[in-house]
Length: 606
Image 1 (cartoon, rainbow, N blue to C red):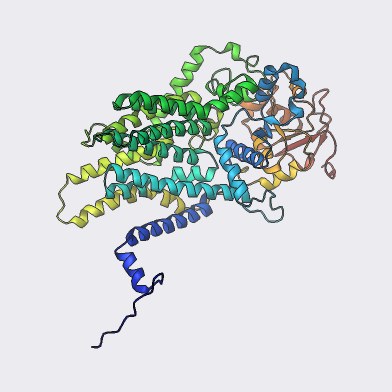
Image 2 (cartoon, rainbow, N blue to C red):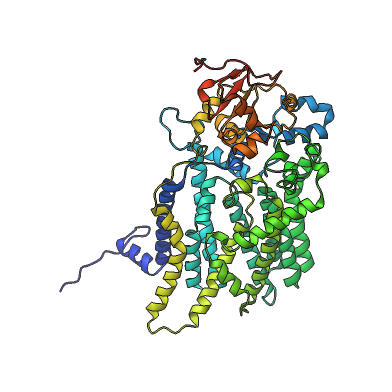
């Protein structure tokens, strides 16, 4: 048989033999695994996006997005979703300019700036079309882009989980941990929610990576390049500060970070402690100084979170009150805060922790706490994780507001979900430790058990995606209605609504939260200046009838109810002296739109 002559390849020439060699001998297997993982993730993301993604439904997601749009337009960190509590803070901090607060762009004093800044950068790089399709309803294009970005961040986190597990355990643990993390429905829902959680999780995993690298260097003898160790400590402190700028409550993570350095480091301990603390303060300090200059408070209205959901401040009363002191703060006692902590902490221990991350790997992690790992680095990182879990559980229970009540699982106040990837890694490592103690007649049977473990953890997501597609929530896919309503208001006018975040995001108009009304005179409207329209949706009109409408004589729900049954808007239903006398009857009974003048083609009264 004659051998075929093969012409040698020229420099820079790509040949079939060269490609085969690269795939078989060089980095080919790694590239193929990465490409296969990426393809599988893209297919799963497309499936989830079609089945379960209806756009933003969380108020804070819309507020962060509209803040990012203002930053991208070089309008500063200003908001169109105006809380009465923010107006009250600004007026009390600068009484000489109290009447001018709403004559200028209102600075935001509620949402941490980290994630809106990321969205602003995204809006500068990618094309965003903020006009809703009025002819054919479809997903809102800006939300689709933001959700797509979150999917990319989620995939990066899967790779980080794989690398961390590979660093601490072995290849098998890394693959199974990454697969279970990728199959956690909780993180897919957070990615599609538009909240800052997925971005904050990336920051936390990078922080853990820095601590792991720092700890490994500490155990080397002699210490290699002390300057790099100090740089890693600075990076850890800086990342804790960046996380605090993404979510104020996450700033508490700096305590476990500094404790980790103090307890487990002997060489350069004081220097690394000081550099990490200074880096944290340098990152977070300027923003705290900005808030102090504007409102005399370090975190604006976010500092009131510990008061919310206490006896005097049910629901969102704090944010809707111009002066929380006058609205009931004087009646608040330490016992009310303690009761809030005990109630929420009990729910966390009974519900949130056992299903941490959306699966039951938590049980394996608990058992792993009894296992003395031979790897000293693993033992140290496990201490860090336990400290962080304990601290975040306390911070979450005290910081819960009405957002956690309205959406118990997918909300920006869920801090424990950030710890779940590390819990998952340690739990998976303990599972394989148990698996190593078992004797299998065939090695393939051991691999089958590991695959079954991953499949069981992945099953809830697959089963949910295989079920029928649920209808969208009333406000989850309504940018068209909100945008059309907002367009009736001029950019220099002010609307008040029970969905101000949606009006600000979809309609790009200034919109105040419904002012707290307990006296029946609606006099607090004057504190906002001229309010040109009020837009009430099903959030108000569809509240529980007895407890939140009939029993509350001066509530906005009662205000809407008094006029709707008789169709007597606006003459018979409005309080004396109420400034908005024109009603759009086409919106009733589900929604109510009142204005100071006719801004639409008047419809005949039915």
